[in-house]
Image 1: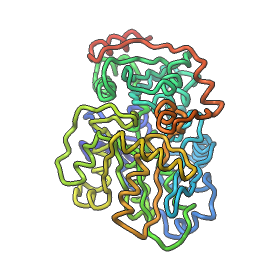
Image 2: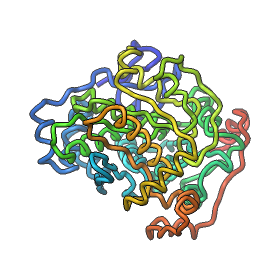
Image 3: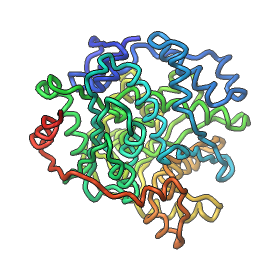
Image 4: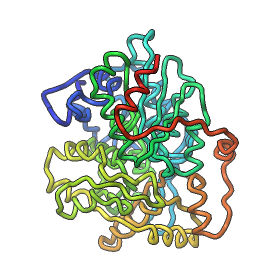
Length: 432
């Protein structure tokens, strides 16, 4: 399989180069040259298959040209080492819980897949691999813990000062070893820009082996399609059409759902649910796509004003903006609406995190206008990761899972960083 740049379909590379480089030299995102379509027989058989069996089937279809059966088994077993249960919150409304991994966030799936695949594909084991990651919260913790202690890999995480929850910070700033955290005096988009500039700098790339573990990297992005197949397989078969609502910031998670649909999963609609960083909902209602400065909210992991996966989404629809706007419905919600949703759903016996609350609201908005659907919203993180927001909303203390509480004991270690590329470049040039 070859992988082409979203900026130039004629520029294509191998799996190894796409994964290790992360970003194309023309600043495009890599995409599969051919998206395999699973047979209807296999789709119909999904309810009888385990999560791992589904993973083997999907990853084999995607990667069998480049990986052998043993490698695919290892990848899937490492990635799907924990469950993703689907729970009914109210009639025809289901929560897909993606927070049962080591850092209690959905990005654990992609980070584990990415670290394992990179270790398989690095040809020159003598040269250290430097993984650059921009995070608005959960990406940093998932990647840090996924790569922690991996020999020959150094991880540099850039995060916006004062704009990540304290518990999220602790999950990637207290680890030490091969994990370095840079506290950038800016917003997430500044962090993301610095990472992209580093990948495009010829001097840095001559000196260092740089890669990314953000969702711009196909190895982080592609495995997220697995839990769409799994969730679909566990829904009751009541003849109703299916809609998935995805709380969205950088839009990799939603793009992974569209990939699953392109592979044959019969999802009728998607909902792009955002906070007031609403450039994509505006686009879906007919406005031109126009990046904006990000706005801080209580759902901070979605505070993205220039979502990097938008070109990937557009490419998945073959550049057909009408089809894009037909298949995906976009809604945005304020902090007040988010808090109200957390309070309302608690009366039903379920506790949402702020991002899941936005996903729930998007799903309800769609279903209010489109009855006779069965809907799934993605609960992307444990509510304890946003304890301050959730506890204030509910007026009660949360009991943190033991592995989450353990992070609070660590000592924060960060390097302050401005948002100029020259400062970041000087830091990178000082490595090795």
